[in-house]
Amino acid sequence: MMCSMLLWASVKTVGLLFLAIPGSLGQDRTVTHIPSKICALHHTSVVLPCKLTYPSSEVVTTSVWHYKKQKNVEPVVVSVVRAFGEHVEDCSLPLNNVMQGNAGIYQFSFMTNSSTQNLTNEDGVTLEITDLKMEIVSKSDVVLEGEWVMLFCGTCIPSLTLPTYIWHKDGRPHSHTHGVNQLELQEAKPEDSGSYSCSISGREGLPSSTVNVTVQWPPKNISVSICSSGEMVEGTSVNLTCSSDANPPVKIYTWFKVGGTSPVGSGQTYSFNLNSRSGGLYYCKVQNEHGSLRSASVPVVLNGETLDLVS
Image (cartoon, rainbow, N blue to C red; front, top):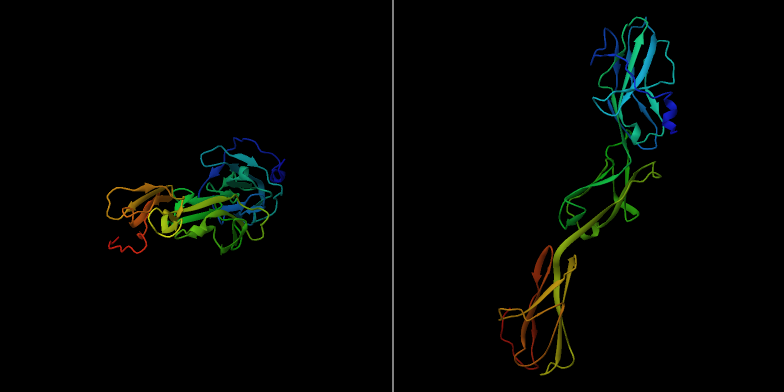
């Protein structure tokens, strides 16, 4: 049985009727939860805040915590280990080793020696549990260079004093450490690609899940290199190779000769034998799923031939 269950003597469905009056629970009798929403890191301890106000002449005769998963659900009783019987104000409930199953709404109810009905605060205190699961806000985990990406560490911020989040990228500390559970990539860059995780300072032994971010971009930095089998004379074998920077890599290469209207070749390398008709200016056009780009034109001419063309 989980450690947190040790705090609960029994958990059962109850049919107790208790008076639920928001704000005031009767003359001079109130139950206050400040804050009314608590977030806890899984496998840690948390104290649900609760304060009683009632006449000093009275004593608490009956007290119980009620628990339910969500609103409009039948509550169950969470028996309180401590016994009341004197005039008390602190009715807080400690929970140890909390997990997702402990998340929900907790309500404290009590009776005094002068009250005739169970008194409670109908709103209670809401407990949220975070396991530091990583979440990404974008169209998908594959983003285009320049797009905005937001990473969230956990579904809520644990109720610690100014928790410090430690971010990791590819298993190494990331330069961004922030007091909140967000890591913003305003304009994603290629170097932002990687596997991200996070933890809270002092709880490094409870790391988050990981999320992979892949940054892609259309072709850029395109160039053409020329390689020949010898001097640029008739019959020389010429290879034109097109290179570019793109992610995903370029799969479509198309070659053009300036002055023509149709492609002269395809593939990353275009090969031909040089002659008077094949000389001229050449360029390549590359394309991936994000866009296309053409290179500058490069001259391929016989030795001594004058090329009077513009790209």
